[in-house]
Image (cartoon, rainbow, N blue to C red; front, side, top):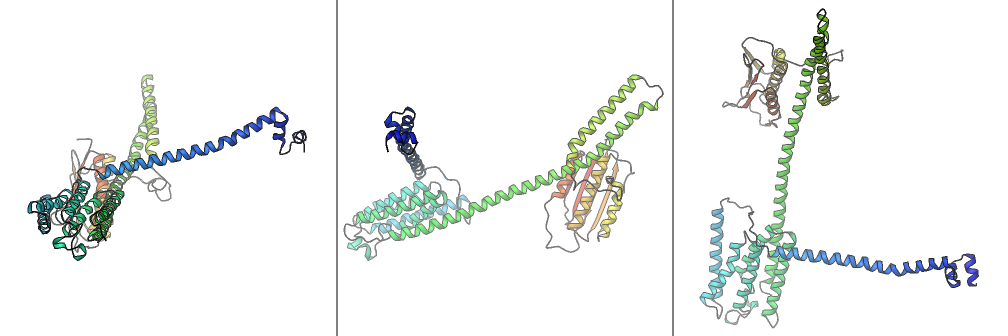
Length: 482
């Protein structure tokens, strides 16, 4: 097939044929495809290079972070749980442990050839000092313990005393005291350090022991105490990390429990405030409606009222209607279908809000439940502001409900005092006739709601246990005559 024929038929070789025959459009397409094929490996190489650079940056960042953690000299204030809380006692026991460690290590090293008493004491101090440093600076104590191990291993050669070898019972490269110190120090590292620090310190300690054994024995190596150190430190660090994780989880659980308790209290407070707001909506809306109706009807009660008076009444009515609409818009949102109030049977209209006039009915209901209730009224009864009257009834209702719930069968005394400056209410219940081991104290939300109602009217409320084991609620609500 000729190039002209391929170009004319548009077959697979049309572009190449067109390029051969000099067709300008097709030759441009071929050059573009060839350029794309050449650029594709460059794009792959660039992406691979970008990934490698990102990997190198990550490795470098992690290495720098690990280096900073391994050489961290900050003071750690958190202490592991102990059977005693006094820091003086803890420091005293730590100091006694260090003194005993120094004495035992010095006595062990004195038996080695070429180790004088002064050198043995110095090596003993180098061995015991990390214990004193570990509680607050675990990483420097770990480095110091490794340095002390090197010093003791160089002074106490593998040949030991009188030519005995490590296989003959010698403690090398760590003595028994050195093993104890290493375990204690690494336990503090595990308690204070992050997971990778724990793994790296254990790995470095194990590698350090292997290198020390290999460098100190040119012949067949006797591992001595190195496997014991590796195994004991691994077990202790795993146990400490698990214990620390459990402690952290319990601490987090306690924090979340406190937050949940605070949220429950805040929710109960908001719920009580919403209920108060709904009842206030009914009270205030009633008064605003009366104002609007009276302002509208007032001009018709006077023959030929002055125009200024008519305009004043019109303004009063308009402001009352606007205030009522705004009140219903803001507070009316709090009334849901489930909390729309109690309706009168067969009418579909909401029942009137309760007042102290219904207190005898409430007391009778409590008596019917098995409570012995005495009611005393001091002072002449008089009409009260609707908000005060409603709050007094609700507080008395909640106090009687608490007495019925927590002290069934006990005697209850209700005192109502009408004074010129307000009204006082006291509800006191005696201890229950029989203890109730299964009764719980409750969440305290009832007392919280009573305090909110008292504060809403500018009153005060005191509630608490009495010396004889009973409970009392004392409230005073001021009136407008104050």
